[in-house]
Length: 114
Length: 110
Figure 1 (cartoon, rainbow over the protein chains, first blue to last red):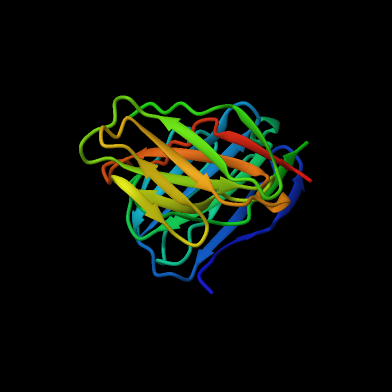
Figure 2 (spheres, chains in turn blue, orange; figure 1 turned 90 degrees about the vertical axis):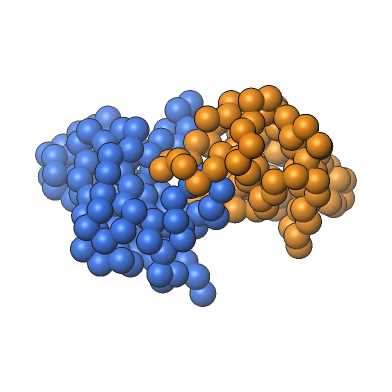
């Protein structure tokens, strides 16, 4: 089954404790991205990757890092999480970039930073 | 990027047909129209995409008039499980991000 898998689904952590949210896709997609969703602000892109070793900032990249060492994986790293990073995070993948390309989203990771 | 306007919310009853219209007056020649569905605390899911006229799949139909300045997502015979937020996206392959907007919250009642 074609899917994007995120882990963990839920995470509560303390300020400053480094964490990684993993994302993996099994569709051989070149394009992957991370979004966060907050009430009243909608979905906002954090980072994206057009291929292995190619990453770029989205609309809200501050406080986040990513890497793309393999085509299927695109982890999101919070080096020093802060409470304003409490949010619902989604990883997405697609064959290529573009508003006219079907994107597949993961189930989401609800992160709480206290 | 084409600005899209959708109703904030809509109400319906089970078994009815629901039509959600999206306005995109400044749509560009190469833009496609794509609709996503999102259930609470889940990732958006692609429903349908079209460029002009009518597109139908097993889930929905998409109607696009000749001037392409609007589009209508049609959900036949909705059920309670169709309660979700529906997003209309307009753009081409030149964008590195998907711009979702606020979407339309559809509430289906028994």
